[in-house]
Image: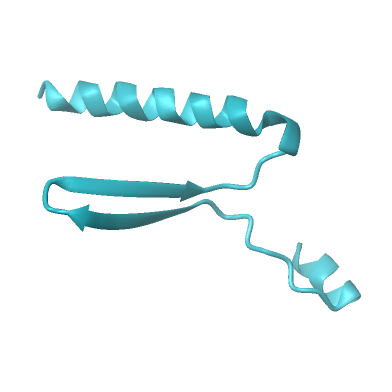
Length: 63
């Protein structure tokens, strides 16, 4: 990506996943995941990430 950026004089967005955390009110946390995905797979990938997160979250609540 850096090579493409240098050759074409353009600013390419980061391809690294990022998580932003918001605490809108006590007892509530919003997590925002930014990850590059192919346009035709966005919703499928969203569902897969959410499913895995919820399974891990539920699993950790029992310990």
